[in-house]
Length: 399
Image (cartoon, rainbow, N blue to C red; front, side, top):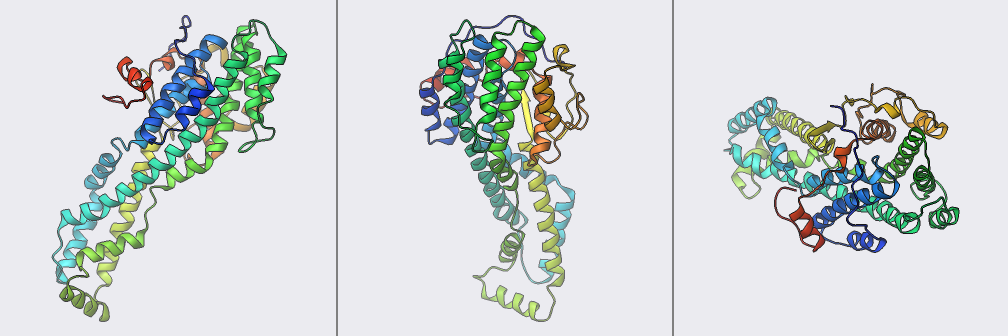
């Protein structure tokens, strides 16, 4: 699907301030904080578009990434989706049946529904909680730094009608030297390129400067986010020994002396070997499916109007005409570092999202493909939901 190009810029209705960003970042409710972060990104995106130009800016993409993150933070559909995968997996069903058959032969009276609900449903809750926490912390970490700098830039340079170097210098002086994760050199370069693009009269040069700025912010952001991204993907990791212990406990409860005596007797004479193998088989299958389902959930990004991107798959759209060939030397140099298949969407999918080079390859092509997509400036929420968020309330309806 080819992104719809821009027609005319829409005026920004609300320009977030540094104080607005700080207030939102200080919220302790992770769900409400994420919703307000998403809306603030949308507001910054629109305001920045009005000041700097019509093409997508970093906050434009951040709006939809934050909205997607909200589903994980709220655990929306995650537990139900993974539970459905476990329940419908034929290999798991067969392994569970084998375990129950062996347990009955050893004198146990297992209940299939109890095994499912008491063991792996609890594991789903724990895995979803870990993923939610990691994504929430990453969402806050990026917002409180980068959205704050966008707000500060607009307050410092947003009203300039001519290139005013002292204004740009005053803004850049507030950024830390050095490379990420601690330094902000890439942010300094990015906002300098945003500012230059505002006064560039050549449309192609202007578009390339803005793409360069977006990628520089993106590289800084993704480097900073590396720990939280790795943690969110590892949240699906299950302690196999603990799951095995819980299953054995359900089959032969500690509180039943007869059951424990029988199990001890069977262990003594080596008659539980088949049961242990059945437990190992079930645990292995459950581990793989939970990790696969949660990873698939985390590696999905939805754009308006109805674009659903799988981050592990190659992008299938095209570069806009203005960015099919690139002349900006700094942009070409940066892409030479982060784009593993220059000027092509081949291998753009990130098989391992925890791998920074793979992730940046996907993001570089994503930013380039959707650079001129007007649909990205669609509202993230309904007007009623936005009104509630501005009042500090959690909105109702589908989020």
